[in-house]
Amino acid sequence: MFKIPTFRSDGAFWPLAERSDFEAGPHASGRLLGKAMALARRFRAEGAARRAMRELESLDDRTLRDIGVSRDQIWHAVRHGRGASSRDAFDIARWS
Image (spheres, rainbow, N blue to C red):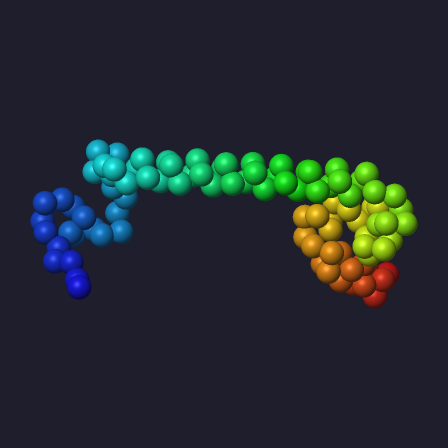
């Protein structure tokens, strides 16, 4: 439905004003938990990327060529995908 504003706080007059820490209540802990979870997600993604790079670096050049990635493209392919690295190489060749 809709919320009827009450005059218990300045929020009724200034809805976009920042809330004080006291007024934030349980939402502050939720935001903190959300940021901690986002940080943990980033750490897991970074770990997965580093494992993928280690695995690709352990392959020989022929296998990498079969995959379609050269040794100097491993970092970019892991971070941005194999298709992105080939598009970038095309753009560099076009503009040089």
